[in-house]
Image (cartoon, rainbow, N blue to C red; front, side, top):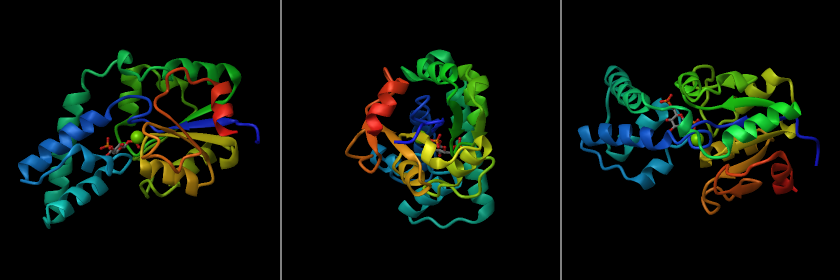
Length: 218
Ligand code: B16
Ligand code: MG
């Protein structure tokens, strides 16, 4: 295995459990439109951009709306989401993440964010870890949402490190697909039956270390 020179982290579901707030806000919106929306449906929205998430929900409800109405609904969902994340603070960081980021930093392994979210900087600031990132690639900068590899490819390009020397940490099927099609190593965080395509899957970031990461990829 080649030397690992960088790690790219998905945000929602890997660094912080904001996925439940996205679910809550989409559920509230779907309810207001009379569309059924379960936690199982929500799996398909993880890692997917705001606009693509809305399109999926509308298609599940067989609802056709014009662009103005869609923008209004996305703004409403984001307003609710921002209310829910208002209280996010460093204690909301998922266990093991902070220690792992510190270990990477000390070892000179570059750290990047590869998130579909347009709220990523706000959340990283609330968690107090914004300064640890060497690059931030997110929904504000990319044109194609996961499973397209753009978010990770552009993160790698900003770091000047090729994909084969980078490990992506992802909790979503769309993100694992994005990492693999970009030629990155990928460690899935969550359910191994859901993320089975990743090179390795662990239930969470607890006790993640550089040694464990390298071991998982062997
Ligand atoms: P926003 P990630 C993704 O973030 C979330 O998983 C997904 O549920 C959300 O719809 C998307 O960001 C867009 O988020 O509405 O904040 O721009 O998992 O790629 O870090
Ligand atoms: Mg995610």
